[in-house]
Length: 389
Image 1 (cartoon, rainbow, N blue to C red):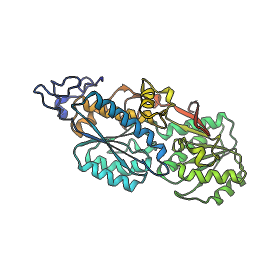
Image 2 (image 1 turned 30 degrees about the horizontal axis):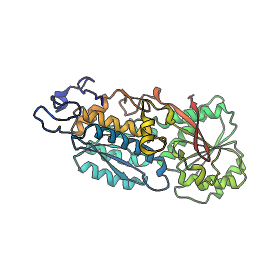
Image 3 (image 1 turned 90 degrees about the horizontal axis):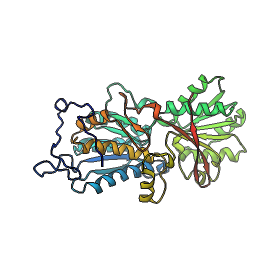
Image 4 (image 1 turned 90 degrees about the vertical axis):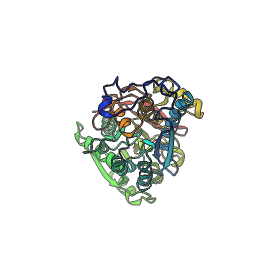
């Protein structure tokens, strides 16, 4: 397994206090005296919704991360690294409790997560206070990155500014005449839908739109359906997760509304057609995540060999987030400060894209590609990559 050299990427070891065992040998992870390297046995957390109605969006990224750790540990039997899973069920309060546990255990050198924007937003200050580096595979809200005083947050996925621009261009190219925008009021859904509204305002020509909000855990949508009937849009965009989308889209179709349904990565669930009882079939879903066949290297083949299925949403991004931690730690970083420094200096091709973080923790937007998918009875069928305005 090829490893990065922290000094080779410009880190000043003396200034950062890096303690790298100069005698480390490939696949032995021992210093010159035969002792185990300081980073052996260290832990990385993974936190996200692993159960519950929105878990299908998160499981592939968890499995991608697990694969990366399995590959490393099989190649390094004498120096294991551990990934510890925390099931937040997408609840920011549960995520905050888990974050405190991670911060208090010095064996944790970082976390992969959060998976959703809301739980990520709520835990960033906790992890910042503990100096715990974060790498999210799928949290896309724009203002998660670049926050004043925040140094620990990073993500390997493009943010909603890029995705909303791609959706707006798609609507313009498709000749949309009126768009009905609905969001669920949470950090992800409201943030993405707000970004999309801005892009529609900037479109040339502008695309008329109407907005509406629902609530998390809402199940009856008579008022929203009535508004859609009155406005007669040709596209309906929903910013949120499957739990609310399922009854919402069923009721829209039951009312005889035939407008094209459109959603973003929060709805990237292979079971979307099933849980909506067919209402979602033909819907377009966008995601800054790759179809399995587009991933670099052998990731897709390795994933399918391990799990018996192709990678789903953010599977490659989960793998990449784990690989950043594994590469940095196996190069000799054994403290949170050293790991954070290694992440800041990381510059390497991943499965999903080339991974290099800017000062705010984002990957280079030029390497982010937003894909469109069509919901079918068999899952999500990749259509094409979408350009931006």
